[in-house]
Amino acid sequence: MSITEHTPTATDGSGDIVQEAERLVERMAQVRSKIGEFIFGQQEVVDQTLITLLAGGHALLIGVPGLAKTKLVETLGTVMGLEDKRVQFTPDLMPADIIGSEVLEESESGQRAFRFIPGPVFCQLLMADEINRASPRTQSALLQAMQEQQVSVAGTRHALPRPFHVLATQNPIEQEGTYPLPEAQLDRFLMQVDVDYPDLDAERRMLMATTGAAEGVPTAVMNAEELLAAQRLVRRIPVGESVVEAILGLVRAGRPESSELPEVREAVAWGPGPRASQALMLTVRVKALLEGRLSPSVDDVVELAGPTLRHRMALNFAARAEGLTLPGLIDRLCEPYR
Image (tube, rainbow, N blue to C red; front, side, top):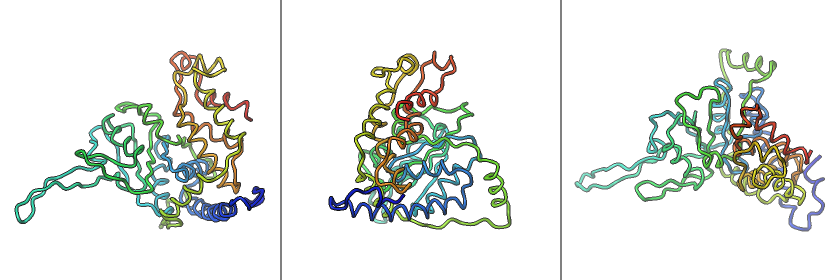
């Protein structure tokens, strides 16, 4: 069903939105097709990452090594026409290694002055590889960049390029020598994207495509200005009252202080805050657009509840000892809306 069929009238100024939305749907189909030539069997991961970018947020990619997380970020940067950089996070990485630093320079006339040398964070798409291997101090430096779109060096603020997105990766199986991300930083990630193994057919295609004599190179389909325009369009998409109520009901039900579910009150150490509601409001709009609909549905809320909430909640020790899991608990929260 087309976007136009979902629009009751065009007399309220929605005609422009419809035309822009149709153009965006066509362009995103090209983006997904181009990415699919290089990333095999990870369509849900690709879609969730694209949803994050179109919503203007940051994503945390969690998966074991070898699942093309790095290649996905590199391919996304090229296909979407963004300036991308990669930082390998290690325990000895310092904040200045990310945000930059000031150096003292002396001119030919003998005058001395400080000059700011920007770090790799000054890009449009930053890959923070194995982010939990850096110290909390370094993670805090990235936190300001993620939240404020600027960094402070020697008391001077430097604005980051727009758009600015962080796609961070994390290895879920090797935790020795790592620093768990603080709750405040986790909350800054719009979505947590879990990257799983590809299916047999996808792995076979990947095997044949990547071990031949020559491997293709991705090309740009979008550019930064088009992405910014798409992000502005997303915020103009109308949201029905039933969807708003589903978002609020779902998020508030995950808080042990206000939930009516006994399993939440007994098992959850801390629940999702208002940023979770904001994240769902944006992501369901993007999902509807990608599927050719002008407004989101409650089904979109249910489908995106997992990647939006699972890094914004934590089970207490007793619940973990009993074998409870966050995905299972989030499914329970979604039951009234299925």
